[in-house]
Amino acid sequence: MIMTRNPQPTPKVVLQVQNASIFYGSFRAVRDVTMDIYANEVTALIGPSGCGKSTLLRCFNRMNDLVPGARVEGKITYHGKDLYARDVDPVEVRRRIGMVFQKPNPFPKSIYDNVVFGARVNKYKGDFDELLETSLRQAALWDEVKDKLQESGLSLSGGQQQRLCIARAIATKPDVILMDEPCSALDPISTLKIEELIHELKQNYTIVIVTHNMQQATRVSDRTAFFNAEATEQGNRVGYLVEYDHTSVIFNNPKQKATMDYVSGRFG
Amino acid sequence: MAATSTPPESPEVAMIRVRRNLRYYLDQGFYYLTMAFALAIAITLVWIVIQIGLTAIPAITQFGLGFLTSTTWDPVQNIYGILPQIYGTLVSAIIALVVAVPLGLGIAIFLSEDFLPTYVTTPIAFAIELLAAIPSVVIGLWGIFILIPFLRPFYTFVHRYLGWIPLFGTEPRGNSLLTLGLVLAFMILPLITSISRQTLVSLPPYLRQGAMALGATRWETILRVLIPAGFSGIVGSIMLALGRAMGETMAAAMLVGNSNRINISLLEPGSTIASLIASQFGEAGRDQVAALLYAGLVLMILSLIVNILAEIIIKKFQNVER
Image (cartoon, rainbow over all chains, first blue to last red; front, side, top):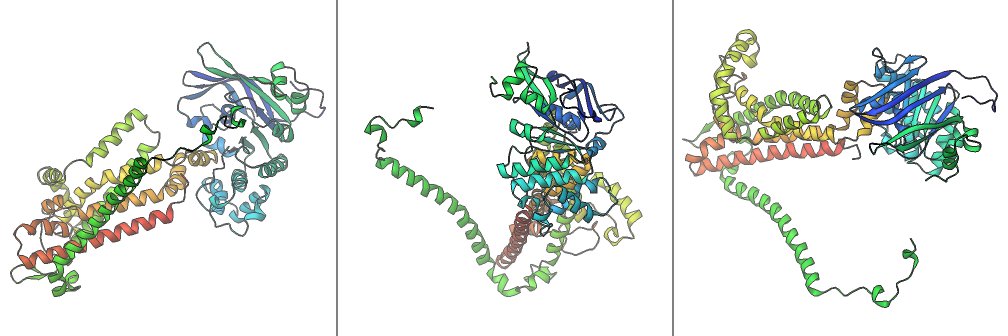
């Protein structure tokens, strides 16, 4: 799987997907995905709508548990520990693996309360003000909001709200941050800011990002996984992993024709 | 599409057709008709207030604000005051809220979360809303014949062991402010439950997901995010319920005991404004009717205050975009 084209020491595997299939009731949404996600890298999941990339993303922090009837077959491990083992508390998983959603979703609370929410529910013992400032600085939002921390998070612009949500995710001190199309509701300037931020965050966190924007994938990611969907005999569509490699390989020299067609816009 | 870029082929297509008179007048007529309906409601309300006020004038001029602080109700000498009724109205409504708010909110949370599949929760929610359809006179009868005998051992127990608290300091009778409060709780429960449940159900799902993704447990999500976000709707339901409890007439007249006294013990009979009016209006003389309508005016003003407070709170806490 690892290409010799970009010679560098193989980084540590954080999340490992082994033959995972994801079901909603009896409907199989994603089949037989196997991939490794490496520490301090940005991994992009791309593919057409309905190919299961968001579904897979939501399995990494067990957010799919909230969907009735959702289940995972195969194995998804986090630092070697099976995420779906009986003794794993999904609440604990989500504290380690944070998430940023497609639509900015600050709580209807003050900016301050939004950022320290995770710390409060995690019974964080340290200094809340310090945590607030470091989180907002890491999210490149501190200068814009430092004078109005008591104002509602909903008073911010869309791009600021999304950075607030990133700050909120950082403040729980996660290890991995999952981003589900974080820029799809934002204008190009806000998008650029978030992308710069992703570059910064990579130093400290492992990032998995779902995106529909292929330029974004080339700009922010180190590795890219291309997913596609195919019709099954029951008339449903099931998503599967086509190709996973360094981003430069996926976009310049993919091994699969489907990948080539998709990244060059000849998808159909 | 190519069609959008081609200009209209003929002048006929481009021309706007002249509106016919009939359509114009229908349109205007509909506008004024709906406006008349809307105004009729407002005018009716004002009219009711004016009429009650006019009929109550003899009592208002005679007793003034002293009506609110006097405890005498003497139809023989025509001296009236409604302090015991105001007290009874407020106390029974508060008892009702103390019982119904936690219960109703709990039911609302239970039914709005996915603890049970929807084919179980939907009938439960429906049954609770049906409670509101029971006529209050039926609830009153149920209170007299079933609830009071059922509660008697409980009252005796409370008096025996908690009698040192003045609230339970007297020998229990069947009809009392406590009985009325409990029945009112039963009557306002559907209101609190259904509105709070609607509020919680209609909260945007991304709030729950956002909280869960930050490592909040289900209870932390409910208590720290969902209830604060739905606060306006929940408070609104409580205020509406309070208004309903204060104005409830039939059950109050049947269960409160209609005794014109203020007693700190909840186990004693009392009286409410609505029960006073209902029980005395039939055989009241002219001066007494004026006093009763004055009492009615006081009740309306109390309800109005509650509703205004509700509006203010709902506006102040309405902070989630729906």
